Image (cartoon, rainbow, N blue to C red):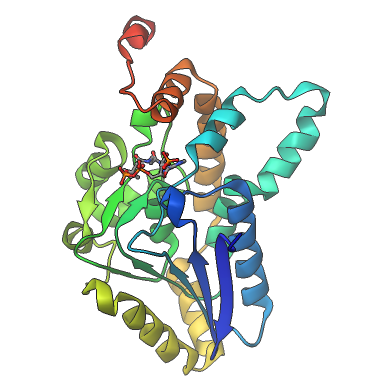
Length: 270
Ligand code: COA
């Protein structure tokens, strides 16, 4: 089976390519672990100046694998609850998300087609984002009975204002490349055929710069990550509760059974 995350280093650039085209690049636990390991190794390597995230076949990612969500929500924790929690903190989506604010080298993303859920929220952590006009950034967290993650409940209102952030994160409205550019989440909209080359060119320019000055400038711009990390912890806790909610179970079952969810049964409970 082909690698579902392909990591390659060339000329000072680490490319992390999500490669699960039959499932629209939906991300499973081991794929997050592979991406996180690449970021950690790349940050520690003198051979890497920047990380570049790419998708495949006109798809960035359809977000977290819904079957994984369904399993996490229902999984009995038993007596090993604390061990499970410690493992979950460092691995899978929570581990990847906690790492994003701590990555020390520039992260660049080239977004073509779907960028769902974490496919959108991880972009708030990237330093440069290039998108095709046909990119479709969407975060159906509320539709899945969930809440925004990866610090997006803080970063999105800061970056694009409360109303646009609400439209993206709560209404679940898709933003195409142009709308994401206007909202300040994308640097430039480029033709699909030129997307990867544009991202690689920007990474190559960064790789030519004095690394100390680049790292210090990036640190100055990002500031203290404490507040962002605290928000991520808040989100993670509520997200875990929501995963086990009846609303989320209905949403996951509906997706896996290829039917529309019915939330009317929950109206009286809120
Ligand atoms: N998790 C698991 N499987 C997924 C997936 C996901 N997030 N997104 C897509 N897939 C699978 C589909 O189940 C389908 O599998 P199958 O061929 O075995 O039936 C395959 O990928 C192709 O997807 P399909 O739905 O047929 O493609 P589409 O172009 O009609 O729609 C999406 C694409 C992304 C709009 C739709 O698949 C979708 O809504 N996915 C869920 C996105 C999501 O909610 N992610 C979580 C965000 S927090």
